[in-house]
Image 1 (cartoon, rainbow over the protein chains, first blue to last red):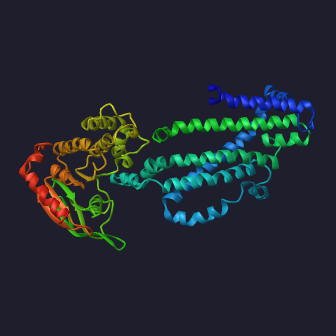
Image 2 (image 1 turned 180 degrees about the vertical axis):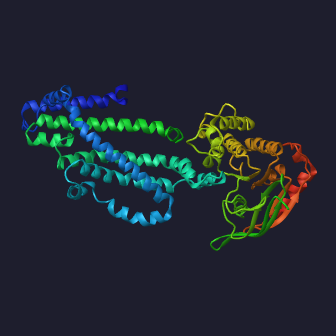
Image 3 (image 1 turned 90 degrees about the vertical axis):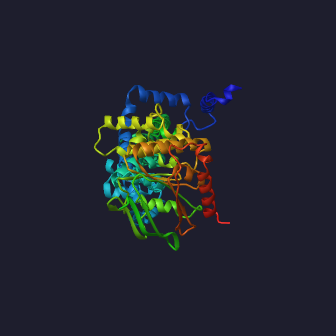
Length: 253
Length: 250
């Protein structure tokens, strides 16, 4: 019975579904072109890995993702602190963020293409722009929620505004900043794929769409699975960093 | 000229007057406790002395300077030690908070932190995080942090209000010991009349808001004080009776 309380049951379910996929595809009840057996998808994936082609697929995507994400992180935290710390900055910028924020990120892509063309700039811009808002929002609400006792503690110990920001406000807001970063990481992955599907000559998004268009259906599925694995790996990395940086927070809650 | 002086100080919050036309002189080295009905403006008064809150009217002076912002000479010890300590800093780094950015080397800071942690009996807890300590220990960290800062004046705002009675007695004796050892000036806000008499040389009784001074009662009780013996002295009992009738007029 212990089996159903561990993660092994979950892994077994995945294995079972893959076996089902294989059996269903081989039985011929579904169109075989659109639905190859898993073994063929696995072969395609393995070929990508073995030939090293997978690195060439992932590197451009990862590069765009990371640059866009880091720009969003820097600007999101900077503006978030500004808006959380200085009331006039909040009054000035909050309405515009509320107007821009609800627009679904993919809608920016055509506009970005007009201004930035079809290259990396457009993709990095769309990623950065989409990731910016969750980080901004969480940073400024984190900064505004800093306990007044902590701020008064900094004051009674004679800290300057800069030292208070660095030693009290930023660390206090860090758990919420990380919440924003986590949301944005998922958005970054979505946006890199979308922007590469709309206009690109490389990257994992382009590979998937191109495989589908040229009827390399096992490759298409292999690309989708690769994306799943990539998302999993990025999230696992994020959680590791978060656990390290926020150890005090996780342990005290 | 007295060390701390409040002249005709008032503080309003909108239409609410917390403190009205209050004057007070405190000599260097005095231990004064401040009692009064809850919500009467005790903390407001203390925050004005600490420069955390500007006075709406009147003058607050500490040493030679008028207090408009927190001064180096006075440090505020908050009631909510669990909110005043920084959860992301270890005990040692919390104590270091006040003496960072003052030109001391890392080694000097560390040495000072160990010294003051020893003084409050927290040797061996330097690398703990605040949430790993009990409430009483956390408030001792806050006291060590205030002492390490080297201020002459401790402004204590119901510092032991949220610990159990036994811990509270220990903390009272700790503060008395440190007050004598470092010749501090202490303003001690409390809602506990017994605590007010036990620790202080003078008990300031405030009225309901807007706070005015109803009485300032000096006591001649000997130091070092004793949790049992001091509280059996007739003078202690008499003062306790007087203060009760002032705070809760029947």
